[in-house]
Image (cartoon, rainbow, N blue to C red; front, side, top):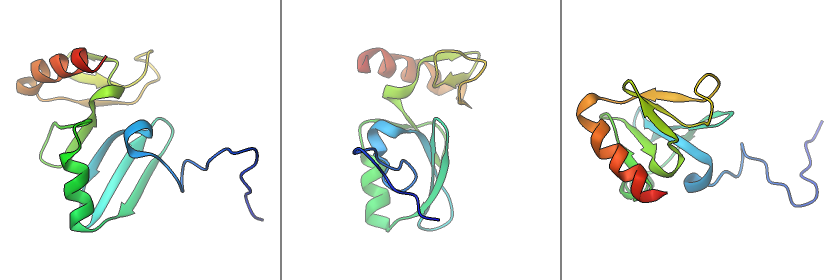
Length: 112
């Protein structure tokens, strides 16, 4: 069975846009990046140059040694947790170290 994209719709799993679709990503084993979106997690192999370019992107901020969040997708930071959806009960979230919370709140305010 073949999945066909009709009417100009794109397949988020094969052709996702990092800046607009990804909530956060984690750099794992050498050349392996795990992208986390609203309804998906995708692992993708990337070259060192691609990873450096991704890490240097101004849309993303490093929260731990291997995790970067998309500042434009953060909706709220409460009790040390960044929420990426409007309703905290059903949105993706990620813990944020206390020392980084103030900086992230400022960046989120500037991005909106």
